[in-house]
Image (cartoon, rainbow, N blue to C red; front, side, top):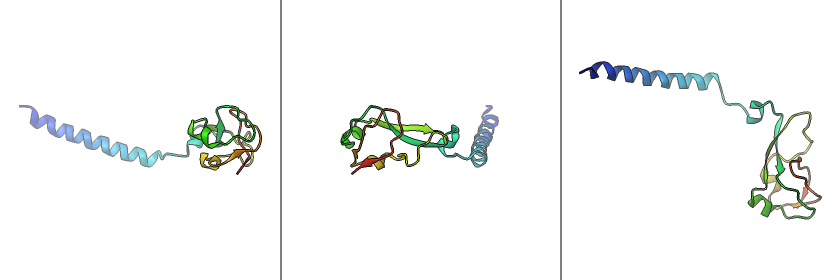
Length: 106
């Protein structure tokens, strides 16, 4: 009986939510993840200590690397920022867990 009142109300509410979602995304764009948290840059760190001359591919496969926030004042020049930079590489020297990785040799 009251369906003629409820159906238009549901349609109006649905259109309102759609409009609100589009307005919100336009006025609040997604920004770089590092910027969201006041982080200078995301760098890749090891979750474990790695001995010199260790092949990094098995460690990558074991998920022994991950991202970490490096504020601008703590970021090391040349730090690895993409896991792909470590593929097919061997550690030139010891890599300490949770420290920025700078150099790896092929």
